[in-house]
Structure formats: C-alpha cells, structure tokens
Amino acid sequence: MTEQTTPAHASAGPAITKACEAELQAERTTEASLQSRALNVITSSGGFVTLALALVAAITGRKDYTVPGTARIFIGAGLACFVAAAVLALITLQVRRQEVLTIETLEKWTSEDAWGSPSEVAQRVIAASTIPLIKDTRKLNGVRAKHLQRAIVAELSAIALLALGIVSVLIEG
Image (cartoon, rainbow, N blue to C red):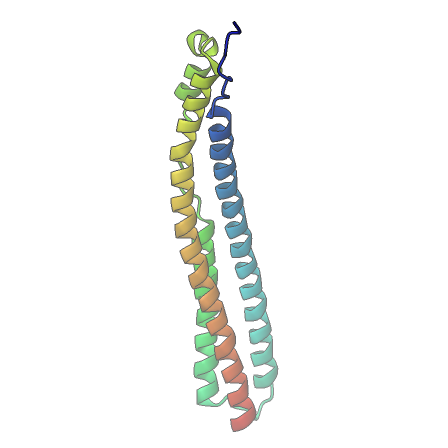
C-alpha cells in the first residue's frame, strides 16, 4: 500500500508582501511625477511672464503708444493667472508630513524574537506595516494632483488671456 501525501502549498505571504511593496513604489513614483510636473508649471509660468513683460515693454516703449484698456485688462489678468499657477504648483511641492516606519517598528523587526520568527510571520508584519504608508501616500498624492490640476488650469487661462490681450493690441492699436 502506498502512502498518499498532499502537495505542499506555498504560502501567499511572499506574493502579498511583493504586491504591497509594488503598490507603495507605484505611489512614490506618482508622487515624484506630480512634483516634476509642478516644477514644469513653475518654470513655464516664469518663462511666459518674462515673455509677456518683454512684449509689453517692447510695445509700450514707443513714446506715442498707449496700451488699449481692454488689452491692459487681459494682460493683467493673464499675469495674475501665471502667478496663481506658480503658487498652486508651489503648494503641490510643499513638504507634508507622511506616515513612515518608526524607529521603534524597525527595532522590533530586528529584535532577537522577531529575527527568529518564521518568514510567514515577518512577511505579514511587513505587509501590514506598508498599508498605512500606501494609504497616506495615496491621500497626499490626491491632494497634490488637485493642486497641480488647478495650477495647469490657471496657466492655460493665463495663456488664453495673454493671447486675448495681444489680439486686443493688434485690433485696437
């Protein structure tokens, strides 16, 4: 008579731990992307403001020229929108307190008792400790994304307003 054995099933722990780590990495990648985009908004807003001011200086440099009132309104509003875009982008970049693994947690993980625990226990503890990090990072990324969206809308509005100001100058004067 032969003895039947059931096949050993691998623990799901490694897969769960890997998934949690991948999710945390994805959120950190999103965070870096949002910050990079915010820097682009600041840079482009600064460039457009410089260009707009140079254009205004060139136009108003003539002694006999007066900028039409409509153009002044559009150009002024456009510049204000560029400033708003830059401020919103800076808010996106603002350092915020994030959930992190505490020194106490790390010390517990490296204690003699924890070190000798089965790997399944360690994987569960590590996976469980990444969940608050993922949750916190995801929440902050949502806030950053909203500020960045507003910054982009402000920048697009500024471009449109400056274009209207330039058209106004060309038509009126």
